[in-house]
Image 1 (cartoon, rainbow, N blue to C red):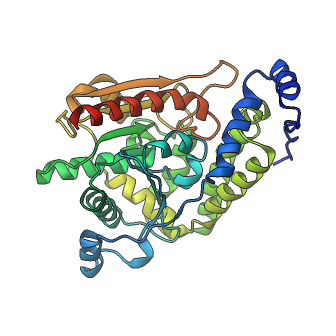
Image 2 (cartoon, rainbow, N blue to C red):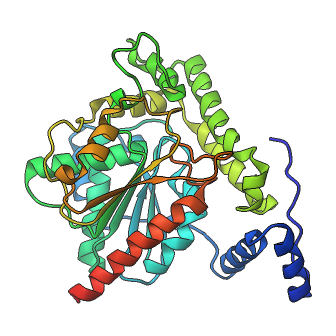
Length: 370
């Protein structure tokens, strides 16, 4: 990526410097300065989280249904507060990178846990076991019900967990749920009625569905190129970046995202796609969760989701049948820079108001319950 020009630093004469910069770029320098100043005091440093409760995941491993190389890595930013959050990201980037800008709206409420998928494999059964173990651990050891945030493929994993939990009977102990651009079945990306994929991501995953599915390095390299292209399409929007990140942050974040994309091997990619194909589609409405739910779609989903995406049809048309306290919204921006599928990095400022309002309502509910 071509180097971006650094945003001029604020001088030691705050009033003159601030007024001058605001005259050229209203609110942008102040917003970045406030965020980076806060990050200097409390850096966004997610560290490995050693799980205490491992009942479900140990049972999966002991039964030979998955291997240790398929375990997700759980990170945490420890913070005081009554409302911890668990974040499940999309295929790429890692959850902590995707929420680099939005984390500032989550950490004031409590600790934030991030699930990063394994690079060399994936097991839906093991992943859901890890997730359920963590939810129960937070409830039992911290006395808090966490909010659960799922993005794209990660939202599909959350929906799969809710459907399996519903089949068993007990309701998951969650404070609330956010689903962002959910991808919950292969038909969301590939229209079975179309002879050729109509979306960019559909063209990526279709070869993985043609047997035999194996770790074809040439296929994986093409997949990496597409994900890099999707990321760079946002990163090359200089005007947007100047309102979001410093030059140093842009370089560091890009390096982290590219590293995550390049680290996925053929087996890991194929097993993630197989997991997507194993999801139970949303077909007949039934209550999956009685608590507050926010479903967010971007205004421009067509590079990823097909026009007749089954999950989108259900969650926009019959949301209350699945989530009685559910609310849906479309995340928008200016016509020259529309919000893309799960664009949490480059359109963080457009997603933030939705998160702020949702978490404010969750905190109010917690106070009323107390």
